[in-house]
Length: 137
Image (cartoon, rainbow, N blue to C red; front, top):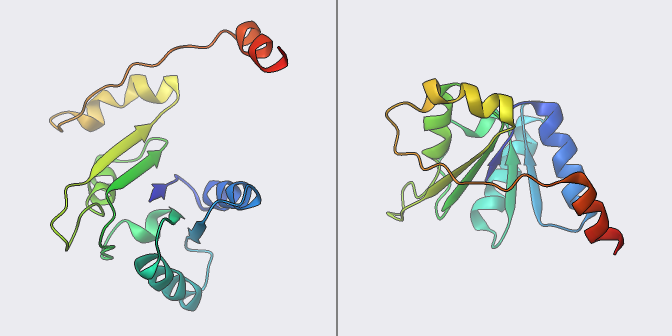
């Protein structure tokens, strides 16, 4: 499951990834309850699917066999904890979470994650000229 910060960002990324033929299920508050219920069942019964979602999937819904939660962008501490709670729920498997932030968010997030078992993953800052040369050849 991939959580996004807004409905608009969720829909944009879902459309983008579906155009790349990825098995994406879109879930957010601008979709009807019937649509969300149908897609939740599809996700639960499916195999190798990715749910792109906003807050509507953060609380009160258990998705068995979810072992990875990706949070794109910063959210409040309580929301982050509930979103991570979607992993492994009701099936006894251990789940993991990945929080993707831009640099300003990363500087701010320390207070939100304080006391949580978080491991910072180093990244390599790409030089724009090197990246262009790699792509163009």
